[in-house]
Image (cartoon, rainbow, N blue to C red; front, side):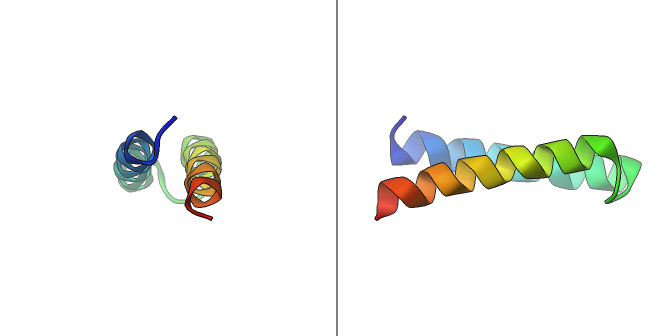
Length: 50
């Protein structure tokens, strides 16, 4: 996956996490799962950057 695609996925996931946190609270399972997914995307993006 190229960096631009990763960046777009990161932004989408970040927005999803913010929406979920407003609806369910920061410690909900949905927010935590989305946070883990966001971490993986950021890690993949950073690997491509180095």
